[in-house]
Amino acid sequence: MPLLLLKLTLTPILIGGASLAARRWGPTIGGWIVALPLTSGPVLLFIAIEHGPTFAATTSVGTLLGLAAIAGYCVGFIAGSTRGPATAFASATAAYAATGLVGQFLAGWPFPVLVLVAAGAIALALMTLPATSSAKSTTPHPRWDLPARIIVGTVLVLTLTSVAPLLGPTASGIVTTFPVYVSVISVFAFLHDGRPAALGVLRGLLVGLFGTVGFYIAVHTLVESAGVGPAFAAAVATSLLVSGLALRQAGTGSRAPANLEIESA
Image (cartoon, rainbow, N blue to C red; front, top):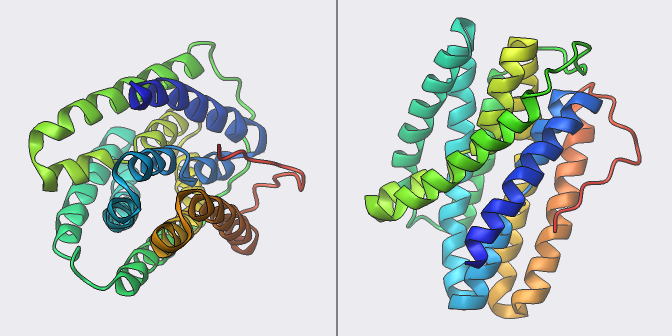
């Protein structure tokens, strides 16, 4: 029940909040917000509380590999985006599945190597992005747009997490880390504002994922020695610091105000 409530609560908040932020400050900020571990972080916290720090440390390895698969998703989306949003999404999904399957064979590698794999995949995906404007949209959105995003995202989250346990551990690991939020936001951005807006979402996502890598490094390194509470507090601080610095360094051109605050609770 706590996980179901988390899905039903966080999904509308995250998709709705990121969509509104994208309208206000540009699509890059929307993608950056959904890169924060606002869903996987609480899920891992529940795992740590229910199954212990050692189990949480092990789980963080698989989730870290999932970030490399998300980078593959972005590359697939970019490759298919010249043919429209449907082709972009299909190409991204295929690339995600392929990258995720390859990642399953790396699970036994040393953790520092996996960190380099995840960070390297994110950096390579960023390099494939063409230069696009990340300016906010000036075209009014229809009234149904935001409710449709929330409904589609919530249905996808519930469907994927319900089907995943039936597929076995390998396929389950791939399915449960599928980037639902960025899929919804990028496709809707594509439909409303075109390819540049969708690619702007991906740019923000990839920049923000560096902070998520930092989150899982902190959890994996500290949860057994420092305890659940201190480890997750350090992980949240690390994620916000690294993702904020990465956003500033990337020079996204989104013109987000200096006092923009994102809560990661």
